[in-house]
View 1 (cartoon, rainbow, N blue to C red):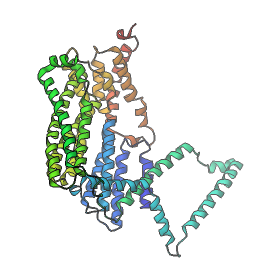
View 2: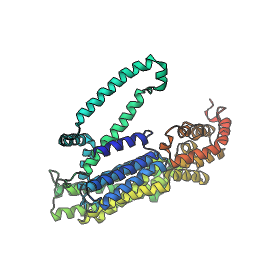
View 3: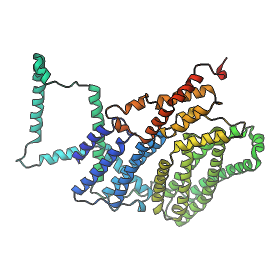
View 4: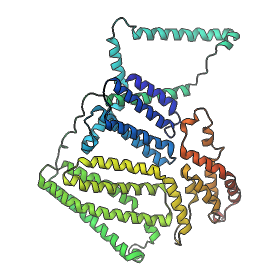
Length: 507
């Protein structure tokens, strides 16, 4: 286990010096997976099928950091990789543990134990290795003696070597001491030490022979029927009032909206969506938490179910309202990452609500955790395939070409220029062809595209540096190729729009 951790620390120093965004990260995850499988086989254990599935999923999601260039998507892939590795450690530690049969609290409890073991790092492994070394037969060399002799030899070599190198230039030309960069050395030590630390702790947790204990039952308190009735009924009344207001706006239209609030449809569209997302996010754990702390009395649990069902129904109506609000939002102002990902997240939460209704509220929660986890991973996999940045760019370009509303904002070319490499070609085309757009915005967008993707940019030059292959990314390569072909036209845009003060900003 100690050698395993040290080798993985060295591999991390070689592959991850430029960060996880690149091909080096999936390579390191693959090495980690192969290494842990070999280590399990060495101790004559069998890798459970669920562990193999989690390790394969970790490699696939880590590959997203070398495939897509969207920062948000890369962050989600990184988190998914961490979750997959944690669950792989859980199933390796206890082959009888299965996500399909686990309760939510038991899964969180098991993940907490793996996280705690990972945080403690390689120290317990090193201590155990030291204890094992002390129990070795006397016929072998003593580790401390070898280390002491090697240290003494190194000190003597350094002192007298420096003196002799300075004493004779011929000897110095034959044997030179490499220059020592303290910052570079410290960075190597930091990367090596960090990954050796966490890999050692993760491996120790995965190969722990003790079965995973279930989470403690109960939370030290329970809710009564009165508590459940008053709290959920109050929340249902609040949700009903909100849904009623939304129906009034839906049937009354913009005339009713303006009469009640004084807002236009475009101003109304800017408000409320993200608050509704938070409502959905908070209600799901609220219902699960209340279910967990009520006692086993069937009457109390039926009361919770009866009050939860209308609450979920109204929450579904609120989610539909939020989606319609976002559709109106996009129609007037366009689509961004901050609007796209919460919308997808709300869609997954709708699936979670269906799972809560069909499993937890029917006293059959065994499939809830597996269903929520698998649909979440499937959603993330679909995002990797669909390429969100290209979807955002295409929606905005099509919207600008077809919108007829005089209140709608035009195409935001500056935002297009900040998207990932997959959307760089579409952004360049829009900046070059949008002759009616604001000159200042075209100037900023053209400069942004060239600064990020031009063949002379820092990103392009990085790939020609030693070790630049570690940061290879398919989306980034697409962006560099697209702007390389459009660089002359973008420079023409800069020359036409940046050399004079745009009329819109004259005073």
